[in-house]
Length: 132
Image (cartoon, rainbow, N blue to C red):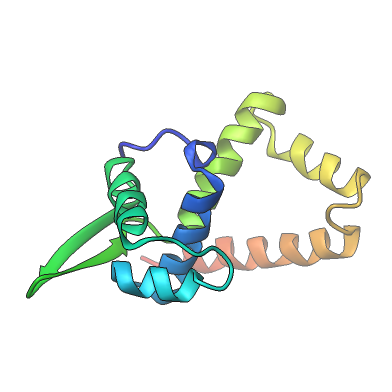
């Protein structure tokens, strides 16, 4: 993976990536028209943003006729997980527990939600143990 961090994306790049992740693949025209009401852009601007995202390692493209079709290299959840891992390493000395306690203490996540997640994690681990 050639990208540095989720933080290396501008606000506009994040907006475009959200669109790509939600659609699975897009053309420059899809991006321009879909974001026109929220963030009007010239066609050249859209193409520049897509090329930049590709050079950062977030997108890849194929050519269909004369149209570039852009797809994400990784699902959004994977990119988010990598960003959280960097946050944990940087601010919590690598401790997920420290991060989660901070989230509960600061009302980012409720204790009940954390308990639900713990049950889900335990169930997932059990399922993985049973697989050959």
